[in-house]
Length: 87
Image 1 (cartoon, rainbow, N blue to C red):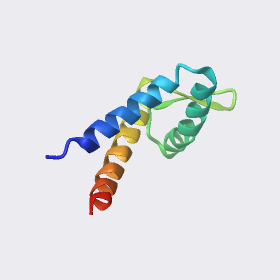
Image 2: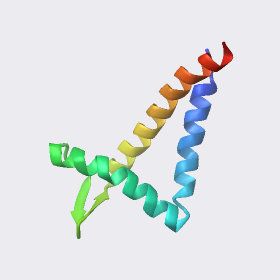
Image 3: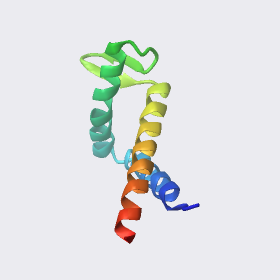
Image 4: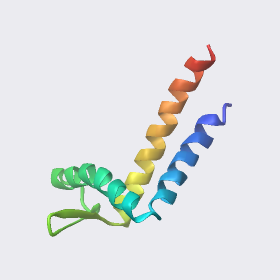
């Protein structure tokens, strides 16, 4: 079993959360990820957050969905890219 996709996906997700300690990066990442969450909320998925003064503020469930989405996307992208580079 190749552990590299697991390690890369976890590292990228942890780096993303570490970047949220920087205020400007936190706002940018929130804006990037609040748009898909707001769309999911409008489609009818409950509990992802609430609308406040024109912005969508994610709840804890929304933040977990963001984290899972970033991790899964990075994991699958790494699994697809790494074997092609080694060939």
